[in-house]
Amino acid sequence: MAKAPPADRLAFERQFWRQGLRVVAGVDEAGRGPLAGPVVAAAVVLPATWGEGAFPADLRDLNDSKQLSENQRKTFFARLTACPEIQRGIASVEPAEIDRINILRATHQAMVAALASLAPSPEHVLVDGLPVAVLRWPQTALVKGDSRSYSIAAASVLAKVTRDRRMLEYDRHYPAYGFARHKGYPTPEHLGALRRHGPCPIHRRSFAPVRAEQGELFPVP
Image 1 (cartoon, rainbow, N blue to C red):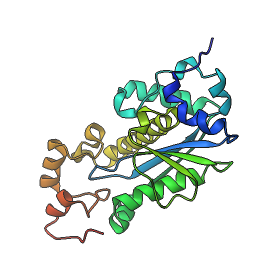
Image 2 (image 1 turned 135 degrees about the vertical axis):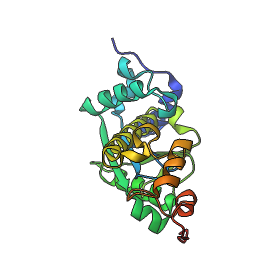
Image 3 (image 1 turned 90 degrees about the vertical axis):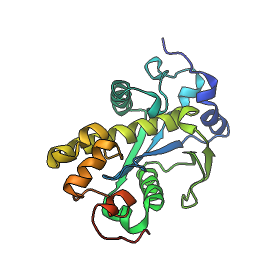
């Protein structure tokens, strides 16, 4: 039998559900720090009925994607995407655009696109971290929100798994860099590959370690 989750992980959603808002979205991103690949954002709306004791037992351990193993993330991704009651949107911004507008703006752009893809539109947004000025919806920013809100945690898992799968695809195209292992983050292996081979088409050329291996300076937006 499904049981209600711990109050602290639905407390923020429940606050707005009790005010009569039904479309409360959590939003989070994956991929701000890597030297290569897109930044991906996801938005998730959980059904308001879950705040009344109908929360699925198989999602009770859902948490910040960084606190989960790769297998746990894959399992939760499958459960979240298979549930017809959950609304979700996923969007990405590619490396060339990141270089053009900078990573912070690119992250916010991906968040806006993920939220805009939801139907119906959000009535309130729970944001992980700091407020996002470009959001056109009412928002509540939660520091460490991906471990305090199930909606944000769900978004963090969808964004992370989606991005990791993209990087696995890129690994097949550019096997010299080891993207399947480090997902584009600046590990010693990745930095060594950059020194040996220079950047490939999915590298963020405005990021300092990549600029250093190009022998030329790209302006930081």
